[in-house]
Length: 290
Image 1 (tube, rainbow, N blue to C red):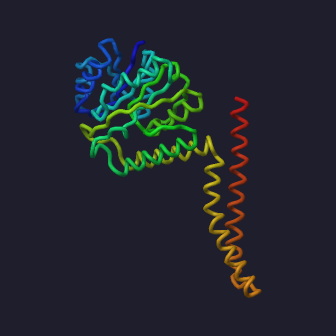
Image 2: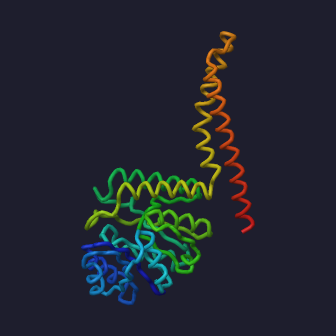
Image 3: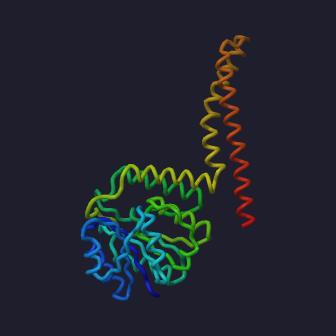
């Protein structure tokens, strides 16, 4: 099976080292595609190391991979970052389930052996929360949904409808894989401190969170609307109970404003839940027809 490896780059000081390491593991016949958006000598070093450089016209992590996917000619497509955080020696472990037809899409689990200070506490928490959410929503059983070291059959990749140009592409790939019924596996890998400037920032975290909420809305609207409705129902019912208690004890209602406010909260909560239920039924019917 021919292998294509995609590496998105933007001013990567270790690009020649990672490419050489990848060739040593995958063999000289492997296709290594560097999708570049650099302002330094990264593309020059990548070419000298034997990679094919594709200049990225757009911007973003997801956009770079989509460009690479369109150019990949291998039967298996691999993904890795250029900052030396991932060890190419684990690629055979990711490829094996694909070659043995045990999976269509394989992720590397960074939390199996993560070096100290390789990831901040905030990033760890964010990764864990996103992974938990995706596991619950799509009945997965994975430990690291945001891993950047992945392997997928080209035939399976061609089935995915990917649109996000940024970091949320990692979640989008998983959700699309679930929708298309792909077999997803996970293998343990190591994760080390990066070489070069980090590309992660608060903006990327916010975008991932927004995309996750959008995906919940699109694929499980009852959960989203149900949670939002609780934000209105819980205080509304709590306030209403206190008013009813006052009426039972004193026989009068003195807080008319609270009565109105409590009624509005409860009615809004019920309305949102009913809306979520209707949208959920419509989404399921559309999926059934498709």
